[in-house]
Image (cartoon, rainbow, N blue to C red; front, top):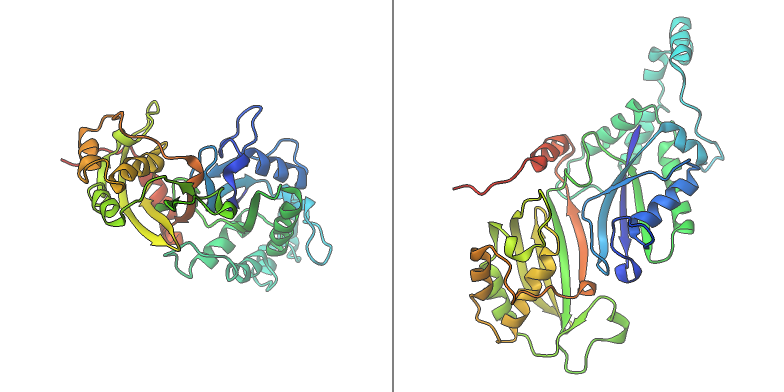
Length: 350
């Protein structure tokens, strides 16, 4: 199996969220269907995503992974018109090794056109996760070579990206496809997710050309009050008051950043955490907006957080103002360890 990393973006307006649902149009469903069609698979592959966005929420920096058998790449042609060869059988490899021919381990290790060499070159074109070292190139090469991927893997992935652009609807784009480093898990290896929430308090309303991504707020908002209230929410806490509970899921999160700026007449909240529970970002924003207009005290959101129970005054802000901007991952050598840490049940330290 070869694990691929997909970097993607979508306009969430006409989607019922990321997660596949029977009878509903979802981002996951569209991409899985497109992959199955292009790769001629009997069943669509299953994607694992960094952040499961709700209906109407957008993404500019979403990340997903998918595991594919080597034979799936046979449906992709390189620039030279070659199709991926079928994976060699154990008997064929054994016979080649005994004969000392071109298929032997010694010959393969000295072949400058090997999968490792080609994939290492391809690694230079990979957009590395923030904080990742240059060693990620060799990790990419190793993971592809170990899986028996075709020698021209980088060309075939470029072909896959182009064909996805032709098959997918215009409101979702897969703009990068790469072989994932060893230990990479789009969801559990992530160190943080960064969201942006956009609000306009302009008296005349939102620019019609930005109506799909900016929420209109009918009263003037004070950025200083918004930031003063947001500061009390930073750190590791139980965010139960700002989350929709899910059976067996923890609501303990580390909120690393929450601040507001006014850019070209638009108020933009930047929200960063190691992970978010269901509706957490929109609930945080919804609790801050009444503070920004002066209707609630600056310390009110902090008091709600301390009580750790849902308050009737916390309203979930509209979905279309929210966009997943970036998912950050550790260096290649730390991916597996990070995934193991993330899977542990979290508790607050005394």
